[in-house]
Image (cartoon, rainbow, N blue to C red; front, side, top):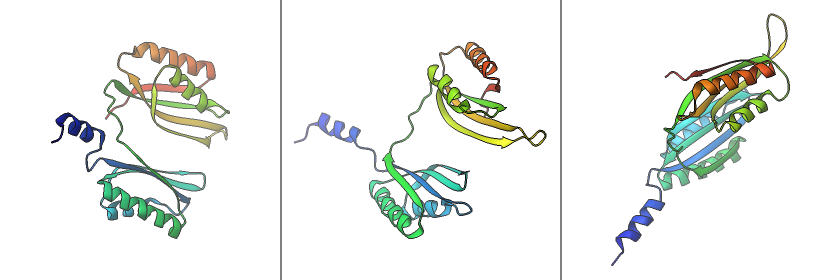
Amino acid sequence: MTDPDLAHRDSASRPSPNENHLLINAYTTHPRSPLLAVTRRIADSGCNLVDTRLSTVGRDVSVTALATGSWDAVAKLETMLGKLEREEGLKLVWYRTGPKPVQSNLLPYVVEVVAADKPGILYQLADFFDHQSITIESLHCSRYRAMQTGAEMFTAQVTIGIPADMHIAALRDDFLEFCDHLNLDAIMDPMKF
């Protein structure tokens, strides 16, 4: 005879059969891309692709992919990734993870910053948001030479999650004052879907 409470606790602690997640990071040198090789292995293993990001940074192309599937499909994918790493010379890192928790109390905002390039801008932006208990959800920043003047420039686009109980106007004022102090041109607007 089994205890119904014990059976419920056991099933609550284990992921459902299709809720096994594998986070994969793959790297190779441009112009090659790991996208085709990784997504093919995900499909061939019987897993589904939940989220993917591709970027070229310096001379390397990186793919970050989140796959989900049954326990045996994810195990099959892990084996396929090991073989892919050995045979095709890709740099791969993967590990089991879980789904992103729902954060319905966070409001999505987009921050865009442009400034003359100088060391530490990204650190200072991240530090500002960290001190405000604001999460950075996504980030893209780069350096470029202005066509008109040749000046070295910094640009960043950051998606942040602002707690719903935070006073937006006060936060925007603090952020713009922070940017003025650092001589950064910036905007902070709600994300429009």
